[in-house]
Image 1 (cartoon, rainbow, N blue to C red):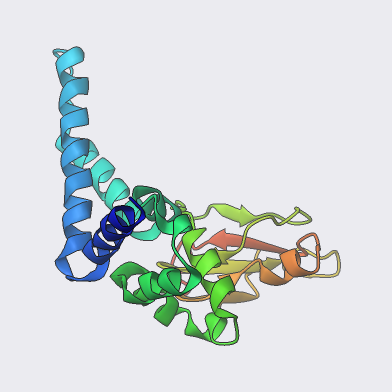
Image 2: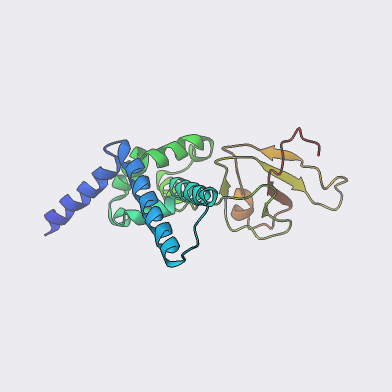
Length: 204
């Protein structure tokens, strides 16, 4: 029985990273399920129909969530927590989305222990913010660390002695991260982090 379970387990793991197309196939499978769900909504709400633009927005949102929400990906493979640490490392290093993420943020992970890297990556949740959205407000308790996969983040200094509080003091580009030191030292944020509302060169 143990041998049978191990063979089944290894077959499931190998199916994740043996071919580069498998993960893309998995995403397509999820999007097909989304199509069926939308059709059921339309069928139960006739004559209501979801507009093509809304449908495309929903589909894009779900696809990005599955690409970047690593916790969701791991939930699809329920055996992850049952395999050895070495197998977990092999899985992280051989699955395309995990590997690409770790490579993109190598400047953060290069000094981290392997076990910490594995646990952090599989704990990642996807967050998609609209332009001009405050991610961390002034004097707030920071409970999450953020890794920027797309877009820019504006950083504002809201200290009382700051003359121009409406002007960003810096911009965080793609593949930057923030929220780390506030968590490590249990500090309230002395800065404001917002998604970019317009290009830095746009004065309006």
